[in-house]
Length: 81
Image 1 (cartoon, rainbow, N blue to C red):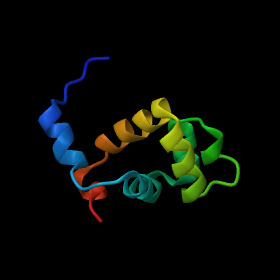
Image 2 (cartoon, rainbow, N blue to C red):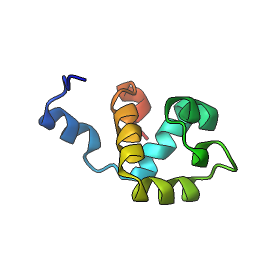
Image 3 (spheres, helix red, strand yellow):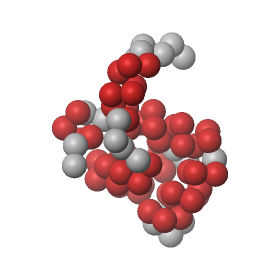
Image 4 (cartoon, one colour):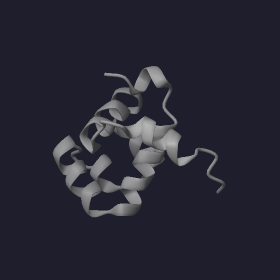
């Protein structure tokens, strides 16, 4: 996979945004079922919650990377509060 986004663009997207904010904004757009379709992990399928998902994502670098990548491709208006 070719990374077309340079480090400066990536930094601008993630500036001042923590993992909980990323997850909350993704949920607003995709819901739990949509997140599971894109990143198939049980914490999005079985009794999903922000708390359990954050715990999993903080311990699982590959899953967190997929969530961050998904966030990067949200429309700019969907990344706003």
